[in-house]
Structure formats: C-alpha cells, structure tokens
Length: 140
Image 1: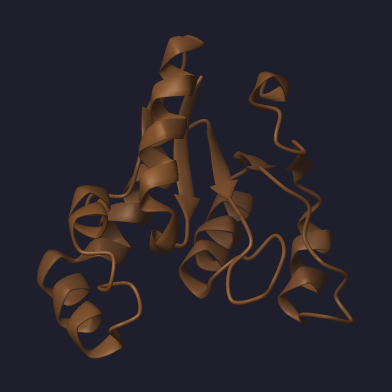
Image 2: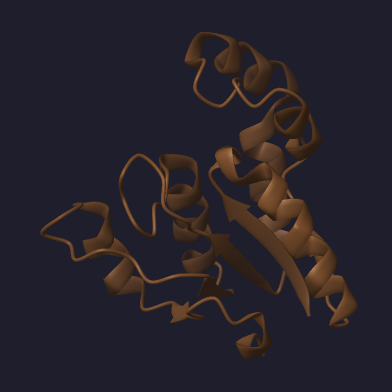
C-alpha cells in the first residue's frame, strides 16, 4: 500500500522511524517534504513566524496535499503534544479532511480524546478512521 504519513512536525523523528518500519513491512511510504528540516531544527515547528516563511517558500501545504492525493491511505501520527493525548494539529486535520474527501483509507496511530475535551475530535469521530492503538500491523 502507498501510505502518506501525516501529523505535527513536532513528530518529525517519529515520522522517519515509522517510515522505515512500514517500508520493512512492504509498504511504499511518503513523509512531508520538509521532515528532515524539522529533524535538524526542532524549534521550527513552534516558531510560527519562521515556519510561515519556510512553508510558503516551499509551498508545503500543496506538496503535502499532492502526496495525500497520490496515496492509498494516510497514517496520522498523533502522540501526546501540548498536554493532549492523541494530538492532531491543524495541518494534519486538513490532510485528514482531504483524504476523507478523496476516499482514502485513514489510520490514526492512537485514539483521540473525547470531543468535550478538544472540539476537533468531533470531526475525527465523524470521519470514523481506523484507530491502530499503536499497532502498525493493523494497516491493511
């Protein structure tokens, strides 16, 4: 299966590690085009002024949308971030929406909080993704 890994760029290292695991399982895997940049500069994800310039110069949103469109499925790495278990950031939420619209399979590595805790979890529940509970072997 051709899989696009999505998620907060705070998880860039995990994206690369997960890519290797999935490839060892026989999948073709893409990660966002600037994953290596975020590994090298971990502060970039939260420096929104610098991040905006970086993302606009490289047209990263369009690049990620194209990778979603070319994939059979997306895997969202949603670890704990900012005190939220199963965190999904705004860019990943947009990629999930696009994948849903395009009829792609949608996998979440971990469950999301109840929507009374974070509003975006309501939309995730509407989409009804496959929750892997950390087990990549459930991808099919």
